[in-house]
Image 1 (cartoon, rainbow, N blue to C red):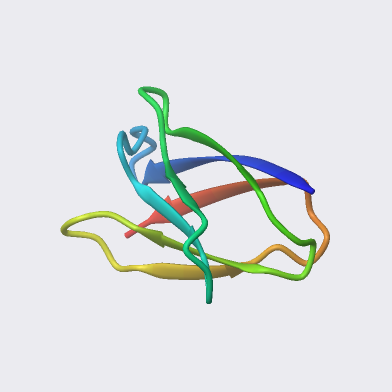
Image 2: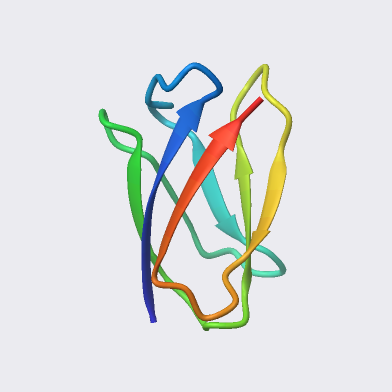
Length: 72
């Protein structure tokens, strides 16, 4: 399935160039100028979201098609 979403900071700023990887694969992408991303993966996958200076997060897709992530 195609998953889309947005990565932002705790104060709501878009995270430009944040890394989005599918756990256990080499499938990945980065966020655009507005913090948005789109990636194709299985509905049971886990995404790893990272950005320099912020805590890396792992988010389970759990069948969702849209995910918004706030990095701290």
